[in-house]
Length: 254
Image 1 (cartoon, rainbow, N blue to C red):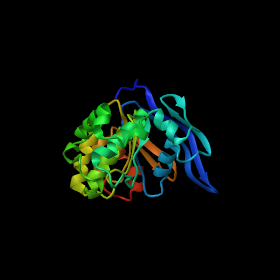
Image 2: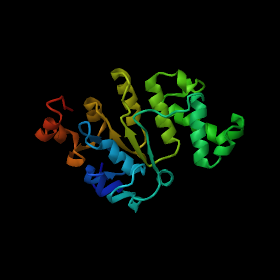
Image 3: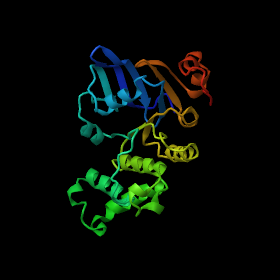
Image 4: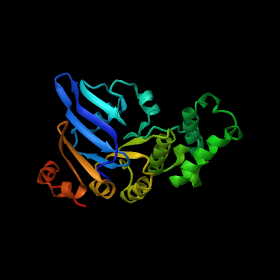
């Protein structure tokens, strides 16, 4: 990634207080367009709080959030989505009784402003169906397009959640622990799919599985007690004694 790449997502001295507790402490981040950027840290480091501030789920106590150079600090979630910022969640949120294709089609129709007509027969949504099917093919889900989402293995449900986010055509996608609850072998396969997403989509990842983080990320920020401890390329993070201390000697390697 070139140092001259434009900045897709930025925070400036971002703070979130809950009463007397400071969950996010003057966090300043700059994520380049097209980056594969990971946020790591021990439990309670403030990673999910930060994601909630970026997406508008929480309002900051101080500081700024910028999306492609534009201030979005006080915009509601739906407006940030409209400007190209989407997210997934630690716990998947799917339409259990819809098929995979119907679920993604609903998201596509909502983005196109025709969500109210979603319940018409599939033939009435030609271009939207084509878009949804192409998205499923990219994520290797086309073979289960007509399966109800509730019948699928958890790992595939997590991929469907990513498909729903991508249906909004984001330029920045925040992945909140996409490997959580997914068997190790299956999660590695899923991350190969993530890595193949087009560079037009900037990816910011929160994940506890360090093997996956170091395979995926090109740059890593380490959060501790709500603040940024350090940020660097994976090889430097792996060798940083402060990072090793934070993880209490756990395996941190490339």
